[in-house]
Image: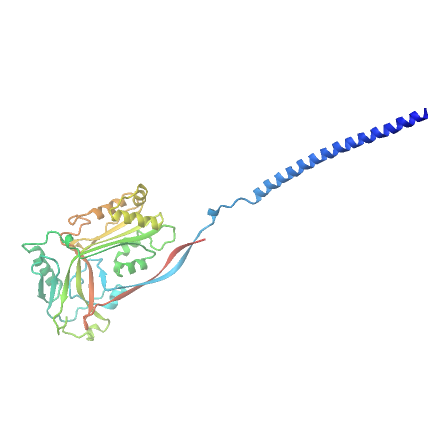
Length: 371
């Protein structure tokens, strides 16, 4: 009896131990699962939190800034674009002080006495091709009228005899920069240009200029060897306020200057304008860009000087530019007439007859994009 009780007690303890081991194992398994799930949940939450507080930064998202750098540019000229009809300047032999050309005042000298000189036309078919005269606007006009308009066999098309051609598109950053690019005498454009196109304004717009020049022929003043243009010497009291120079050559042809302003980047505007001017295939995007660009188109035509049709902002501006590019010689607004206009001139020193050079300088700010 006692032995039986002892046996049951031992068996009970053994079964209780097995039961404890079973529950302990199950509990450990459940704890491992719980901890695993917990760690996964914490890990996922941590990743989500990290993504929220540390967003992905694109390589292209670097911010760019536009800064303005000061530049100083100087340009020297021996031939000067002729931007305004002026009877004092419009003949070979006209006297002016060199200093006034630099300062844009254009002070002419009158108290002197001319000697006779020869004026020669380079136009093929001009008859007479030269004339000896006392320099004045009237005597030069008489010579030109005789050699061109009274000529029984005048030249049919002076465009075919083009001796020089220049064409470019440039960004312009201030009115002073504009004067430098045009040989200084662009001050006459203050009212027409400065009031319409804000060169130098820092508003994100691009501004520039197109220049096109074609020289058909010229009138040259020739002074006989051992002679002088005037009887007075270069150090005469009449010239004490400046260095006397004279107009030695007048170039005839056609000159067009186009001032423009656009909301598009300058590089895109220049590419579109160059494509249009060169007569190449222009894209729809370029056409739309040009139609939404503001222009002022200026053309030297015939003896009427510089015509400046000031256009208004909008797509109609593009029509002025197209008409100017397509205009023939007799176009009433943009043509150069049958024999062209005075488009530039050269100056020489009275005492040495050497070419006079003028240097124009401008300081302006240029935009530069930095990261």
